[in-house]
Image 1 (cartoon, rainbow over the protein chains, first blue to last red):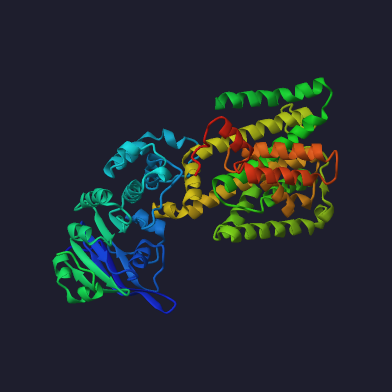
Image 2 (cartoon, rainbow over the protein chains, first blue to last red):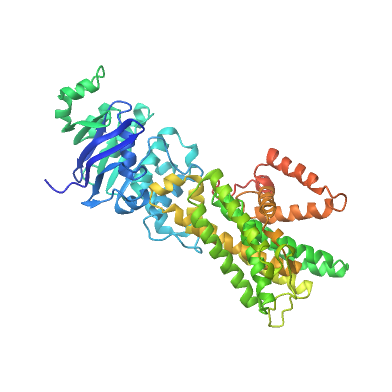
Length: 251
Length: 315
């Protein structure tokens, strides 16, 4: 097997007496969509926080493309090529869709310590933003102020901002949270289109979506990875069934 | 529309001293210089407070540092504006860089308090400098010298010099705000976490912004020292920082003209009301209360609303 894009070794984090992340090992191959599932409070978002650099782990290491990134900050990791989205939508609410995306494109276009040329005149920036808007299905909404978009559209923009960083690894934290069936279908199609081109770690509660999209699944319970493998092996795993007691995994 | 208003405003400012001279009211030229200088000081605070979302409560430290730089150099025999004014900007900016480097590691109320603490330390530093007047302050023997036949000693010459400097500073600020740097700063105010998460080292952008604002405040200090011919530690006292903040709130937080309008209204109120009573701040307080309660966006915000315009990319 090729060198994994992301490798996590014995990652550990506790808050007071609670072990939120308990010796987590994880390995994500380039190009795969790797789903991270688990009951509420299993520590999924805490793990994403540590992978993205928002939280410092107590112990363990994170390697991206073979490089130890454990001590790097959030923005340094983005510049290396790993970016995250947020479970609670985090966009620039006062700016329009295009402007939102242009900001994210700007971040990887060298230094922004420039004081003279108006940003809106940087054509290539906005051309790329337009392409991104099309990719996340917001072409018709380019000029709409982000804060006034419908909830589903805001979620699309959320994924769009993460995509716009040009990252090779996308850490998507519940991109389907709070979406209706139609909106949900749109975002699922969007993520499905990443397959092969980008690597995705997908935290999601919607099991239908998970089993439709994922090449590999890891199950987190009480901060531990209790199973990791192909979607089929996870479906058949007895430990997983116990963790999800009462919740039926889709056949 | 906007451009036309700017040109008309500028033309009025150019014509103003001629009118004052015609009606023999030269006192108002000096007053107008003061308004312009404070317009620059308040605008520099607006840059960090309104656009960058950094509520600094120690802006007087940079203004005072700029003023003292000119006064101290003058005492030591350096009277050329070409030396002392750029030095005032440089020293205030470096000072802001140092204070910002520490302060910007904190957020919210801690940031307010730490900038206030630094400013008060600076205040006491200048009080303790007995060689330069200590508590009593320092008189400037003359105004800075500009050369090229430009005479700062005359109120008219000084006014036009101040006008040129303040107008070009505001123009630079406008360019900066619409360019990459300003757009990044404003986006950080809206959502700093997101800016980190799309790859911006937000701390450094904020620090650069803070440094620029410090330098601009230093420039206004250099001009103020010349205008009043006197510097004292009072320039650095926390009430002075408060005055600048009141100007920004009156004028419009995060509006390009907020600082200038705020300075104008504040100093006019001071001028008019203090003619009636020494408790003129009571009147000012009422006006401020009215703005905070009924016109959150300040005077610039009200004008923009009247014109049916939204300020550029406001949240």
